[in-house]
Amino acid sequence: MLEYFVQQLINGLTLGSIYGLIAIGYTMVYGIIGMINFAHGDIFMVGSFIALATFLILTSVFGFVFLPVVLLIVLIIAMLFTSAWGWTVERFAYRPLRGSFRLAPLITAIGMSIVLQNFVQVTQGARVKPLPPQIQGGVTLMEGSTENGTILVQLSYMQMIIIFTTLFLMIGFTLLISRTSLGRAQRACEQDRKMAALLGVNVDRTISLTFVMGAALAAVAGLMFLLLYGVIDFYIGFLAGVKAFTAAVLGGIGSLPGAMLGGLAIGLIEVFWSGYFTVEYKDVAAFSILAIVLIFMPSGLLGKPEVEKV
Amino acid sequence: MSEAGQPLLRIRNVETYYGKIIALRGVDVDVFPGEIVTLIGANGAGKSTLMMTICGSPQARAGEIVYDGNDITLAPTHEIMRRGIAQSPEGRRIFPRMTVLENLQMGALLVDDEHFDGDLERIFTLFPRLKERASQRGGTLSGGEQQMLAIARALMGRPKLLLLDEPSLGLAPLIVKQIFEVIGELNKRDGLTVFLVEQNAFHALKLAHRGYVMVNGKITMSGTGADLLKREEVRAAYLEGGRH
Image (cartoon, rainbow over the protein chains, first blue to last red):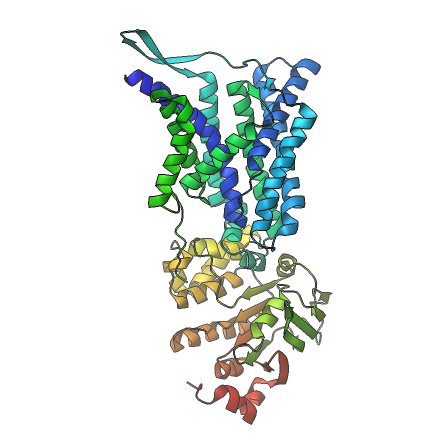
């Protein structure tokens, strides 16, 4: 059944795009300061809450109705506020610990994750927050018939928006990192922070900017998640965070294309496993594949080998 | 701008520690505009520590460092470098996963973009080897090429004061000669002020206007290059057997 396969492929790419966008935040922060920012999934959750709040304020308080404009404003505000969160977390929770032993920022990150979750739970309540579907409809790509009737392959407008936004952001980001002086400064800090400072790079500011960029992308993912699934709660950051982190490791942590590839891979594995086998075991499948890949390729699919000629 | 007679770099009584271990014990050094000054000494004497202390990494725990009339002792590294100091550091510290060109772009980070093409042309004339390797990753260069790249990267920052930490380390004598010629030429032609740390004392003292000798974190002798070359203690400790 080709149609079924194609439909799952589309669904998988959509989910994978969201994972990939979150995974970039993990991988960039790891690349530059060698730390897993366990609070990043919760930054994503905060992003989706800010998006929801902004959306409701715009539509019900100010009475905006034209959806594209509303969504654009929501996106910008969510990115701004989430970036401010990311910046604040780095500035007050991680920077004071830079230079201390390696586990300290890691433990702080877990603490920060708990703080963010509970803060949102206390201020927003523990119940799920619904948002009625905003973008409906789609296009039918294929039509096939089976013994049980016809099967349609549909690409919804929402899926299109998610896939194309992700593609656009990925291209933009890759160019930013590879071509601009900011991107060069980031890579320089990644490779030799002391030398970067000797060339006039403000290392602290560059690290802050990395957190801000990761948080902004997480906000985009948060908005997409909200629009796609229509419900959010204070706990969505945890599972999405673990998945995105897995994606970053699978792709090769520290590698930007790796994060995207890993995200797509995790998304596809989950969706195909659910589609052909059982939904209950989709996470088991995703993590098993991670384990298998790491056994044979310890630095991930696109990871850099540690050895370098000196 | 500094007036004539004012040192471009004035180091007074500087003490630097690594944790509880003292590395510099009250160092005094002056570098005047347009000079080449060399600092020689054995391994572990504290030469590289002084170079890094000038750049605020680590910062001096006592004493003062004045550059161009401003106290920079406790300024953050990136702000010190913004004032026109560039360093080619110990161990070269090339960015291994960046191309040669990107390494040079990093060197020019603080310089207006309009100068880039001209400066790059000039660097490639000085080091034609780097032009051939422009798109190769820094980590794949040979030691000598990396050394050239480290110096070139520092020059791309259009420094007023160039700090060179052992540019001759690990290089073939012919290349050492070339590099010293380049340094001498930049000094004569552009008036570039150079503070040079060397173990290769003979070459360094010949090139330099003045020199300092460092032993165990302290300056023990100073004088003109020619003067130091003649001194018995210097010859015995740093030159005999090294004069090739």
